[in-house]
Image (cartoon, rainbow, N blue to C red; front, top):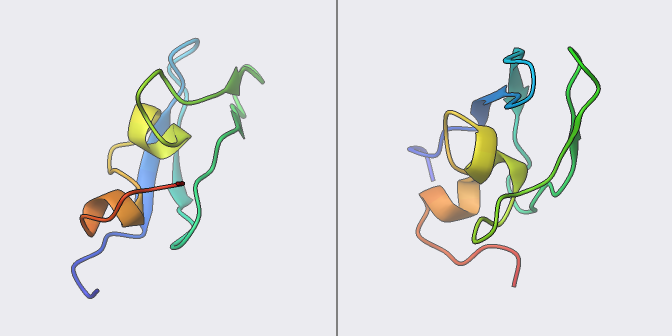
Length: 70
């Protein structure tokens, strides 16, 4: 599990604001409020969480090859 990256930079599609966040290791995050414009981000169709949709790094379960959020 040492090759799992716990950080991801989320980029808001509405305003372009970026922030480095610590991802939960064993859970999905379905909502994220942009600090720039307060847009509420939700996962894109087919993605399990906001990190998989808008982050620079996929969530830890996906990184480790597991299914996420069954």
